[in-house]
Length: 57
Image (cartoon, rainbow, N blue to C red; front, side, top):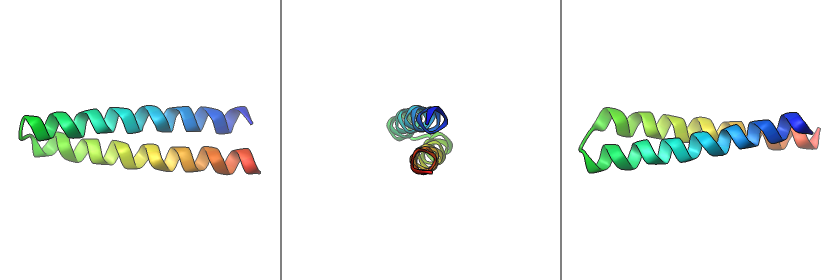
């Protein structure tokens, strides 16, 4: 179960980091930073789903 929790925490961190990058990129009109933020958020969502799967199996 610890593996699943670890993945969920990492996913949450990546989602927060991605949201920050996305918002900062939007505020500074930096499209590259916005794109990086969106990628980080998506990565975080996947990590959280992996953690949920590991917890169930």
